[in-house]
Length: 238
Image (cartoon, rainbow, N blue to C red; front, top):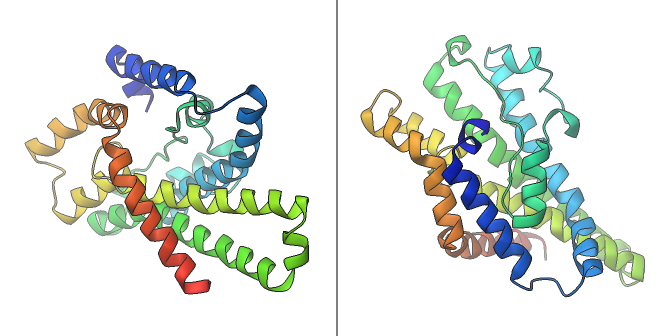
């Protein structure tokens, strides 16, 4: 990710998105922004930490000791949160964790194992979304009185944020654009690693992603996809 941020065009696009986020009138006051941020923080920390942990754990189990040597096989947020990516996520709705470094040469079956590593993060995000929705369902079923209280409503907002953020991380990372996991998935499925297409797209991937976000093209994809996943999970329990 730092390689992409060193590109002045990419950095300018991020600043432009930040300016839009600040001036679009999304929040009415500083207190409104602060309360919204505090509600989102648990979901951001949980979603990013477990996403990166899943990559590290699966890579380690597939034979690569690199994540273990870098102390990434842990759910400790300090090992996975990138400060700049975290701040960007708070202010512009787009951010990242510290990428897990892997060495595919250590994998027993490189194509299969790279595919498993690429899918690990989004899979765990989906599992977390479902588990927190189960928790929300249990609270409504067995503690409805508490959930209708002021404290219960705050807890509900936090749980819903955790659910939504994990779903968003899952769907967003499945987009087939580098440096997202979706690009690694299609790379392994179609064996694109040594093709000219792979290197051309990978080299410009972050700029492509920035433009798509800036013009809300990703939003048009994410909104219906996230809503569908959320509704599907809701339909299972409620």
